[in-house]
Amino acid sequence: MATVGFLGVGGLASLLLRGLQGSGHRFVLSPRGAETAARLAAEFGCEVADSNQEVVDRAEAVFVSLPAATGADELARLTFRPGQPVLSAMAGTGLARLREVTGPARAVIGMMPGYANAYRLGPSILCPDDDFWRGFLAHIGPVHLFADERQFTAAATFGAFSGATVWWMAHLADWYAAQGIDPATARALVAGTLRGNAEVLLQEPRPLDEIARGVTTPGGITLQLLDHLDEKGALAAWHTGLEAILKRMSGGG
Ligand SMILES: NC(=O)c1ccc[n+]([C@@H]2O[C@H](COP(=O)([O-])OP(=O)(O)OC[C@H]3O[C@@H](n4cnc5c(N)ncnc54)[C@H](OP(=O)(O)O)[C@@H]3O)[C@@H](O)[C@H]2O)c1
Image (cartoon, rainbow, N blue to C red; front, side, top):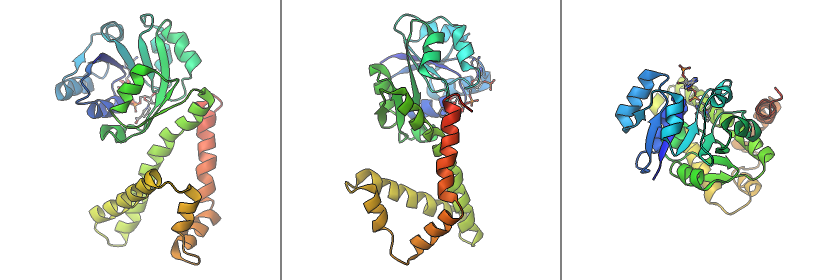
């Protein structure tokens, strides 16, 4: 098992470190955000380096969770070893830019939902495949490999989709609670419904449209709600919203 460095110790790093407990890896953290770094060090037995360069020097592999807007510039100030495995989860930093700023390192890009990884249930995507990072990410959920960066970037919009569904679930739970249902029951009902349906999609061998037809009684309440959402543009808005995210992540918006 390896010593893995984390550059950028904020929300994502905290969640991943939680999920990575028991993976056997050791962790060395960047010092900025001293309070969070100290809390994570105490909670998960990580070490905190004195500088970002020290993280790179002490770690066999480096996970990058720096802010998307400034992270690549920070990486350009650091010196990596030839072949050192580096994985960036920074939204919108493509392979060419990452490799330019990490020099001789073996750099790849990835995306994951974050919170679900703390429960080892979050899918990760990785481009291109990398032995070290495939094994590392497998501790915190299923890993999907992409050889083609254009497809990876399209898939990486699921980071936004994932976060938006949490707000969507909260929005639905609020509606049930507003009908007088106990908020804890409303929350469990919404989450349990989606978990159950997610399992159906993961386990059923039938095509997706067949499953969808199977849950829709002609003239029934599912169809009524679906028609209403469609009429209001709610379904189309998921597509147009993701297209806008894809444009931004491809550097066009
Ligand atoms: N949140 C998620 O679930 C998620 C999921 C997938 C990917 N991502 C990606 O992961 C990255 C981090 O997201 P996040 O949500 O964890 O953001 P965050 O909570 O803001 O964490 C970023 C951390 O990096 C620190 N930082 C800033 N500049 C630094 C530098 N030069 N050296 C060392 N540390 C520095 C920040 O410190 P200060 O607060 O002092 O600036 C902060 O603690 C982003 O690029 C995002 O696209 C996030």
